[in-house]
Length: 271
Ligand code: DGL
Image 1 (tube, helix red, strand yellow):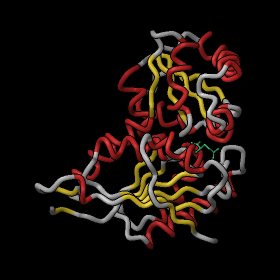
Image 2 (cartoon, helix red, strand yellow):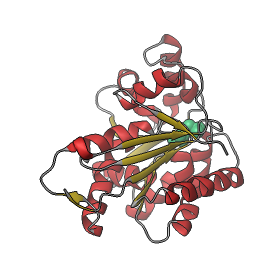
Image 3 (cartoon, protein in one colour):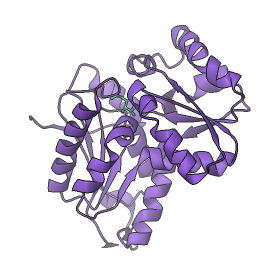
Image 4 (cartoon, helix red, strand yellow):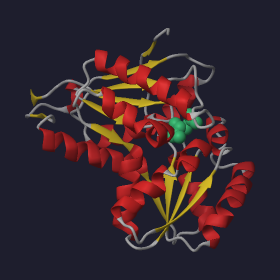
């Protein structure tokens, strides 16, 4: 196997970013990944910008010490308010974030159209999705809605629960009233709610999963920068490390639900 075998660094406020790792494993099976989840300090989605910037800087510095060749901001909240911090510290290695990927996918699907965006309060208040969508397509109309209860409901495993269904109906009502044709799932946890959201919103609404589009963007960027693993050997050479700041109760179960496979060994760092 040849090419650049250094791992890709993927990070999130907790374990939700494993939805991005899952998409990366499928799209780029030859690539190794180091995942960092700040499980001791999650959730970020209700914290201030200054705090999120500070935490983000710590995580980026840590991953750079693991000699990653690319950084992927899997957390929408960090991408919304601390993307500049990541780029400033990355030392020139490529940086991909879920908001850029989600915005590109939204515009590709719904150019000039009406686009809904859902996310944590910090992500929605930052207006980051609307700004990035408008930078790509000034004529798009963006309708946003914060859904603060979705993260705890997903972590509880209530993916198909009546309480989650009622919550989704309540949150989506104003966005659906705007007759949007697509809905960006602007939070790591929301891809797990896809079947329920599809039920609530109807089959016609296109759900945009930023995990899948992030993996596409990462693949293109690795190729472009000449950093992709190439050669004839199989995916068995790819290694996966999972590093967290705490191992909370039910971590394994929830993590494996996000990842869609067994997690294996989990490393914990003490800050
Ligand atoms: N990872 C966060 C996001 O994608 C959700 C969890 C949190 O609030 O930290 O916005």
